[in-house]
Length: 154
Length: 67
Image (cartoon, rainbow over all chains, first blue to last red; front, side):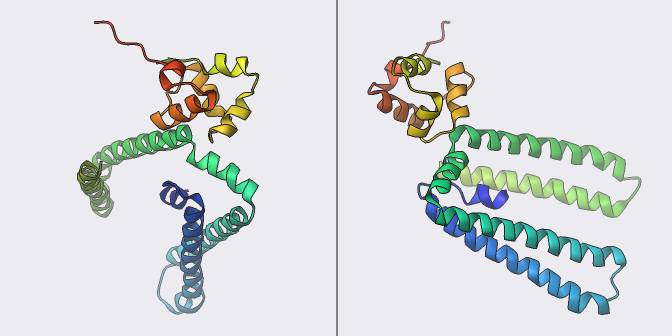
């Protein structure tokens, strides 16, 4: 969804689809590298079962997502009627506004949740506290940097 | 802002799906425009006005706020 959102826009939808296909291939490579690591490196490592499971789960999820995106994008590139329908759906201004608003709401609610969690996590686990405070700083930095960039761009 | 999309569409006997197809948006967007829940961008307003052969002001009615 994120790749679709990032690579949709501008006037040339067919170019977006070709970029999306490359993104799917790159994602597929990451998934396959994950599988290779899980198969060749992880069994000889001292990773816990939990961490080993993460490799398999992440590799499976990324590979499945990449394959789905690749097949769908290839289908859209080769079927003009389906491509037109998808273009209308993906570039429809109301749909895009809905996605933008939903993203804003999700971001806002998440950061409020993170700040709230800081108070609960601090007495329980310092590592989790540092991770959460890192998220808050990252969010703030990204917000100010994107604000600065958009102020110059628009 | 209100608009005359539904009135103009019915006068020309075209469906919401047909209008949506002509101006490259989804039928749901036309439904939202007609019901006044969504305001069109300048680009979409221009496309719709062009489709009906009218100006933007003839299709979209801007109401000035009274102090």
